[in-house]
Length: 302
Image (cartoon, rainbow, N blue to C red):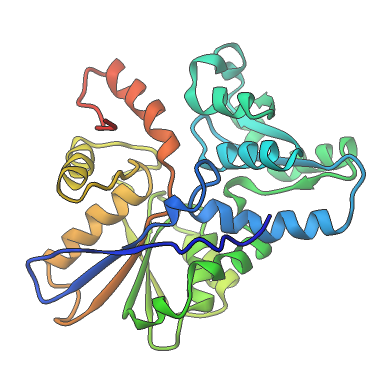
């Protein structure tokens, strides 16, 4: 993998307040290895391939609509690497063809193993089994978060991002905010918008970042993956106003909460805020299928 030389645009989102809000379009970095996933995989893959392993294999974990699974599969296809996804939910082995994410991963060459939710929770044991079966494989954690991922996130920051007072990102497993926190300028405050109800996240991020310049904000609507009608309306309104597609699990929830905080005067007047669009758009098709079955409004992707 090579660091993209294509500039990632930063665009302003106009507000009716004395506050400036900008969005860094990391979702545009690659059609399928999107947003923060590109940078979280960057050092993991480069370090692994530098070891010249025989018959390289990349193994990772994820759920039915995982952005990480989709990104690893796309990376495997692009760089001609064998990939294996350990997928949560053994029932999916009989209907994966009906799942847009898993079907795309398969088309990109990823093999899948479906395990029960109970088995999936014990990833240490699963990893031990996989290490014996694939002694030369690179095994990447769920969501891609590890030390090398945090190092890779530094490329989401540059000279241009140093001019902002606040840096904002959605938080799932914690790797992206840890990297932003670690490599942020000294005067910058980092805000992480939690899309999962995990009370242990702060300690995880602090350990990975080694800096206390961040704050976590609840933005999960009760649990990971929950899509409320309010969130659908926000995403569709945002696209109508600004022409930018948001996903319903990460960036959509982050920006909706961020707009609420701006309205509630959380930020001092004159603040300059940068939010990161971390991709995840591949998950919209699957989300819309679930919403359609529930006879609910859909996320506009036209």
